[in-house]
Length: 399
Ligand code: LRH
Ligand code: MN
Image (cartoon, rainbow, N blue to C red; front, side, top):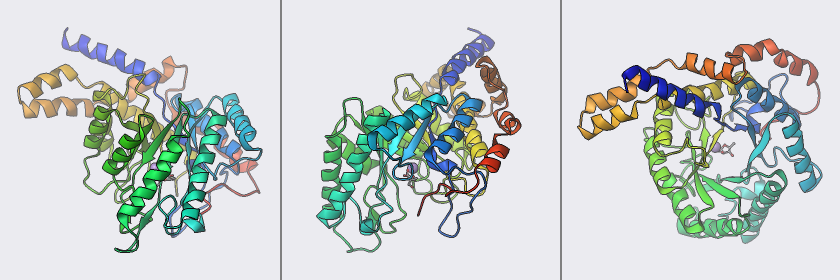
């Protein structure tokens, strides 16, 4: 096959993958967020889970690649128990999106100061496990597959608590929740190096999450939040390893310059996103049945939220298009021959390819405007929500 026909074949194959790409947006990114210094409220921000879904539907309408929305409990709590969540799921469907992962929250209650599921006090542990089980009840109502677990649990000073005992408590709680999962449900266990704990975090790294998941069973998978690693960590190696083990369940995509900055994915380090998605592709993670949840987990503290999320979806699409254009045969050959520069060159050729025209074609073939950001701007939705969403309590982290 000549070079050009091979490239045409790669382009056609890439289009097929890009047309079915699904990136989950986080309900909390549509609400107000900030840092410990300040939360800058923005006009037009949603006041209810339904208004968050209205905004998420805009992102999907203009990108065609964001059909699901992750919820966070209690930030997205609705009245009416399971029926209430079933109605919320129906509301989402009517707007062309579906409810995705259910995120638990055992990091904002006074009782959890010394930990939630790892707390020395068994009553506090029972309360935390109770919330996690309530989240599974909500999954039953919304039809969500994934329970996403992130624990802020940790200590600030050596000796504050027994690190081994805390792991025993964590394992016991995870087992209780795991055994409650339905056949088609999973738990994805997210790790984070530090913050809010500043000495030892109980699930600090991929190895700790992986080890707990192995003990629990197949329905327990690791969630890789791209902002949760020590500076200099080779995240794509972790991705390659977990894919090889069949334990890469989900991504929380964002980007950072320093710590858990939760900036737009690809904004701080587009080459890192490319390297991560290359290992995703290499490990079969872009195949239809990979089961990996590609989610955004971001905070748009100063920039307009809906356009920022549209831009983020486009950043993932662009990085995905680039990795799909990698000439894998030439790469494998160069690697076999130990031709370091040729091998690196193949990857850099793909990375340096301007894939924006390809994505514009994909959008047009999907009946979408080739310019999602421009189309959103022209839609007048931003002006409309600023005008309509007056009064009431704007959504936020409630921290
Ligand atoms: C923790 C985290 C987790 C979410 C929260 C919104 O830093 O990444 O995924 O629960 O952000
Ligand atoms: Mn996260």
